[in-house]
Image 1 (cartoon, rainbow, N blue to C red):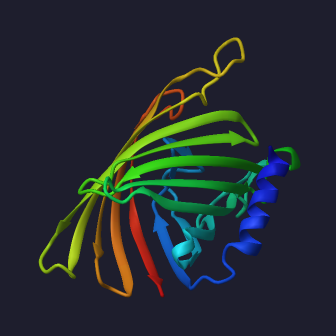
Image 2 (tube, rainbow, N blue to C red):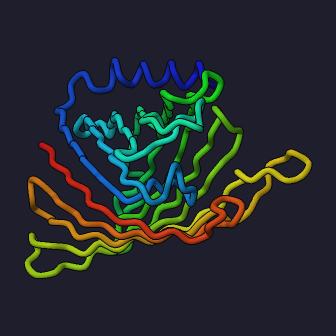
Length: 248
């Protein structure tokens, strides 16, 4: 499976973009915590910086990207938990192919691959891999159903139903209040027999301010996550921050 994903990714990178017009988008985000699928990663009261870059290849539907995360305050070294060091980091690389299945229905599909790298973790836990497929509808609430399968650190899946709605706050090209929400199930939790257990994972709601026609977007964001207690013992988490993005 890993070898197959690697071959597919290399083939896409070498051949698909050959005659495509490229676009580049850069994001520089900072939040009061790192919340991932209901999990609170690291300390939930520490500032986290999360930059990213994505390259799109025009009408091919292909995009390639890299994304990173690190805490800018006290962080704990996974290998030396008694010391406060700046070592709880993450670096992800991904490839996505998206296309329309039906223009009339507004139905689209996305397939992709993500490589997660954790530079400071022990050698046997410093990377993971994930493949996904998602279906979406192009309408006012942008519903999407996405299935993720992790075949690296854990052999488990995560499926999310998400949607969102944009509320203009003035002119068509001006400020927009974007509301997003998702509900998910997974089999991340392991029961007393050591087998994965299927169940509710999390509900997440976000609200952000952005600009439709701005070349540089500064989007204050507020989020709330309610998770299964076996996923997040604190159960409820609120975080906030700002997302800065620009591209061409």
